Image (cartoon, rainbow, N blue to C red; front, side, top):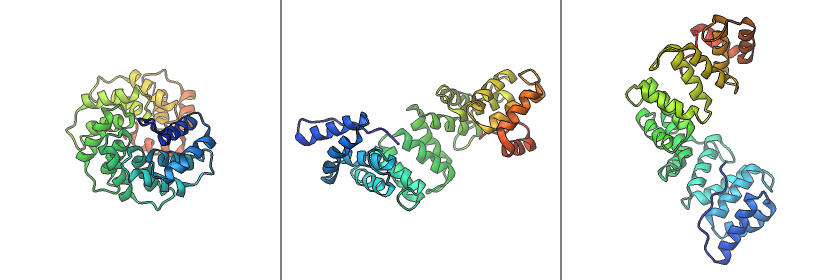
Amino acid sequence: MAALALECLFCTPARADLAAGQRAFDNGDYAAALKEFLPLATQGDHVAQYGLGLMYGGGRGVPQDLVQAAKWFRLAAEQGMSSAQYSLGLMFGGGLGIPQDDKEGAKWFRLAAEQGDARAQFNIGFMYYEGKGVSQDYKEAVRWYRAAAEQGNQDAQSHLGAAYYQGKGISQDYKEALKWFLAAAEQRNDDARFNLGLMYYGGNGVPQDYREAAKWFRLAAEHGRPEAQYNLGRMYFDGQGVPQDYVQAHLWFNLAGPAASQTASRTGISLLR
């Protein structure tokens, strides 16, 4: 979860205690942080409440207790703290300490997203794309993906690229897809790297270039992406963009595992995801 958000601190005893708690939290002295946060949180300080949520959620200085984490996140979220709203959305989405509820998750993600939280913007966009907790709406998904992507969120950049590539919620535009995939790939996003490999392999929006495709598949494959591992193995097997090498092909096929191999063997190079 997120690091503790700092706020402007005023020269009052309560704010001084909060500052001490924040310093202790950031330095990993969770016993001291708990001592400062607990009385402030009980009095209604939303930053201290959020800090307790992080501590209970991660078992930092206290036994991990997701029920307590959800309780403190909710108290801070109800006061309008975007980081707490995002965290509470995660708790509802995963059924962590509270009953799983996609509608509630979407509600809290949207509240945080409307305050500019890029993580929440991506998550509510994904929920609109999948129709989880909200009615499926590709245009609304793209709107939130773009908001987060423009803030540098790599997952949103990759998903916005996929929306442009597939023409879902927006007119198909390979140049825009390439732009956003590259932006995400520069942040080492393996979905974007894999999709760049597909673009260069198929010559979609770029000149077909097997060497460039193999480069991007390799980057994703080396980080454990099974489809990329299979595709790189297939390119070694066929000698496309790399020297033909059955030993390398066998190595990458084995790393991909049977599920990726069986899926891709029916279609050739795996489809965009």
